[in-house]
Image (cartoon, rainbow over all chains, first blue to last red):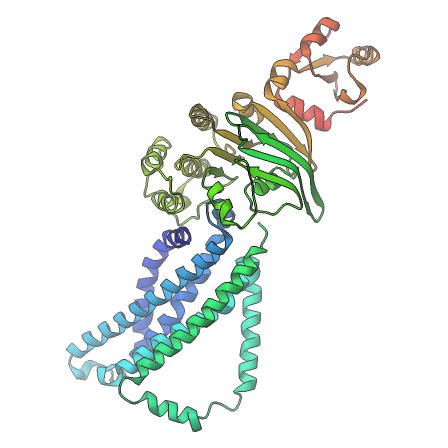
Length: 234
Length: 294
C-alpha cells in the first residue's frame, strides 16, 4: 500500500502545487461573490478531492502505467486500498488547507478597516461553526461521491467509468428528488437536532459524526472496489 | 538447479484468440528470445508469467514456485524480477527522480546509487519529466528502474523498440553486464531479431497462440542456412529427399527461391553447386511462418 501512496503522490506533486494556487483564487472569488467565506471554503473542500481522483484515474491509463504498476511487488488489493488511502489523505489535507485558508483570510480581513470589508465577509458573519460545517460537510459529501465513483473506475477504467459514473449520479439525484421532492422540513427530531447544533460546540461533535459516517461508507466502498478490481483484465 | 521461469502447457482464451499449449523455460544463466508476428501471443504469455492475467490452462512457475495471481506470495516473486514493457511505463507528470522514489517504496532491495548511476549513464537528468523524454529515453528510464533493484530475472517486452542503433547497443551491453553477474536470466520478446543474434541463447517463436519452434540460437545462426536455388535446383533437392517433407520451407521470389535448410554444411556437401548462406533469425522465422511447405 505504501508503494501505491508514494507513487500517487509522486505523480500528483506538480498538480498539487498548481491546485493549491487555483483553490486559493477560487475560494477568494467565491467568498467575494457569495459574500461568505464559508461558501468559498466549502467549494474548495468539495472540489479538490474529486478533481484529484479523476486526475489519478486519467494518469493510470497513460502509457500503460496501471498495467506496469501491477508488475511491481504489489497486489491488486494493495492497489485499491492504496488509492483509497491516497484520496483519504487528500480529503484530510483538503480540510486542513480549506480551514487554514478560511481562517487566514478572516484574520487578514479582521485587520482591515470595517468600512472596506463587504458585510458578508466580516469575521462576525463567518463564525467557526459555519466554516467548519461547510468544509467538513463539503468533504464528506465528496467522500460519498468518491465512494460511488471509485469502484466503477477501478472495475472499468477511467474511460468507461466517465460514461457510467454520471449515469449513476443522475439515478441517485432522481431518487433523491423523488424522496425529498417537497423539501426537508426541520420538524420533530430534525428540528431538535438543528437546535442542538446551535448549542456550544455541538457542531464539532456533529461534524465528527458526519465524518465518521462518510468514512464508514468510504471503507465499505474500498472493500467492494477491491473485489471488482480482482476481475479487471489488463 | 531451479529454473527462473517454467511455463507448461499455458492456455488462455479471448474472443477471437487462443493461446494453447505454450511451454517455455528460462534457465539460470540463459537469455531466451521470444519472437513472432504481432498478435501471436507473446505479450499474453508474458502477462501470464507475471501473474497479470490468470491462465485458463497450464502452470507458470517463477523461481520454482507456482504462481497464483493476486496472492502476496506472488509479490515476493515479483520483487525478484525487473520488467520493461513496450512503452515508458511512467506517467507524463512523473520525473526521473520520482521514478526512483517509487522504486524505493516498492522494492526492499532498491539500490538508489545504482539507479542514479544508470540514469546518469543514460543522460537522464533527475528533474526531467517523462513528458519531456523521447520514446527511447523513456525506455531507458524504464530499463534503469528495472535494473536498480538487482533482479534475478528480467522480462522485457519490446524493450529496445524505438531506440537508435547506438542506444540499442548500449542497452545490449547493459544486459550482457547483467548476465555476467551470477545465475540470472532474461526472457526477451522482440521484433528486432538482430538483437537476439547478439545476446540470446534460445529462441522461441510463437504464431497464432502456439509455439512454432524452440531452438538454441546457435542451431539457427551457426547451423541453419538459406539455400539460394533456381527452380530446377529446388526440384532436384526435393527429389533427393534431403529434407523431410514436413521440414521443407520455401520462399519464392522473382529470380528463384530460398530454401530453409537446418544444416547448411551438410547441404553444401550434398549440393556443392547451390549457394547456401547462414540463416539469420529473421530468415528462419520468416521462412518457417510464411514459407511454402512441400
